Length: 310
Length: 271
Image 1: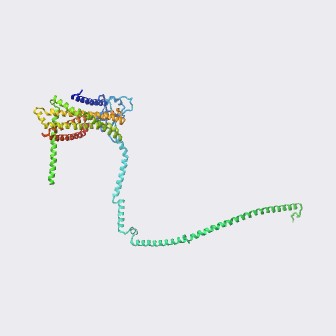
Image 2: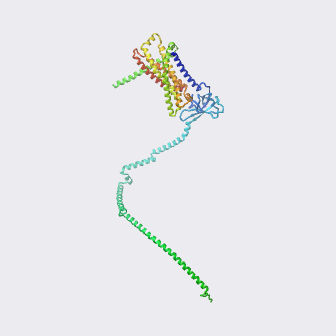
Image 3: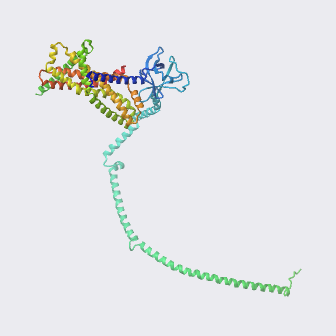
């Protein structure tokens, strides 16, 4: 069956409109358009960073949005936040509403609940909004650095003032430098400036020339000495030769000494025999003595000494 | 010599400026005339309904296969490019906002209006120019048939309806292609995908998209009609009228697009 133009157009329009409406309805349903909402009131000292439509986050999830902002009789900003009923359970009497102002980026409205067992927050009760300001924190941290920078700036200012002072040290140094450079420009050389006059410079140059001549002579002398000492027929080779001969002679003397040592040891051996002979003679003499004593005891050849009295 | 050349140059610019201003004024007057009839109940009758039906058929239904193919190809290409790029720079969280605020709110109406303009605006322009050359418009006037009601109004309404509906269809194609592509290539579940879209989508954006599509639809039909009626009695004036009409249609598309980018955020802030 071939469809008529009217049917084709009708199907196209109906299908497209239905698709679009279905999409819209699903989106509206998911966004909670058909859901009942509860409006909570939160007071704040300032409306800075707040705007209508601003989302309210709980644990990173968007659970509501700012519906209205108005100024109360007391000068407080009253924030009306609408929250779908299925999210209202997160809002408790001890819930804390925070306005987080990060250093970079837009302000963020969040609610934090520690005790989920506490009583639900009444829509008639106005909670207080607490501001968490990263900018102020950052300023507080940066303040000491800024103070130090201020001190450094003051020092730099003082330094520049000293530099700019006509009676200051820097001015004096500059004046001296000027004099020095003027003096330097008036002289032929630094040496002239140091010595004072040209005659002294000439004398200095003459001294230098004399020193150079002496140095040349010393160099010639040293060359000659070198030749005499280290040359082929110099002193040093001769000394070396003599020392070598002396070493050879010492070797020979060593052999002779060995012989002497040997002779000495032999002599020492002979001395041992003499000691034996002497001990024999000593023992014979002792025997003779003992014999004489025995004889004296047995045969008194000698009268006893007497003491003659007067 | 130089002075006369400069004078000629200035005169030329002045002439072009005046011509453009008059043309703009003429276009606005014609737009006002069409808009006034659009909201006039007496303009509608069975003959108008029949023309309207045929125009919607020619403009929206006949183009459907080509349109859907183009929409699917463009959606997959854009979703792929955007998704892959966001993934590579670690900003995939912006996938939803970009899909809604760029693809659906901007690309869908723009691509739709380009396709309709290429196919239908040129046809309408040529049709009206031929009718003018063949003196059919004069004949209708002789028979006291209101050409605005009978010829122009149904085409303008068909243009508005077609662009709006096809834009909605394009948006649906984008959402579906995005769902399939992100599921296959980004391992994104349908639930996450829909949640991301819902988080980013706002009713105002959709309303703005619809209004923009309607404005596009109005001008891409109204401008060719106006240029078609400006054809002379000669056959050679037909291509000239079509060329002028199409150039102006594309200029109008760009102007509306730029204006929408400027005006929409301002209205959004006010609301």
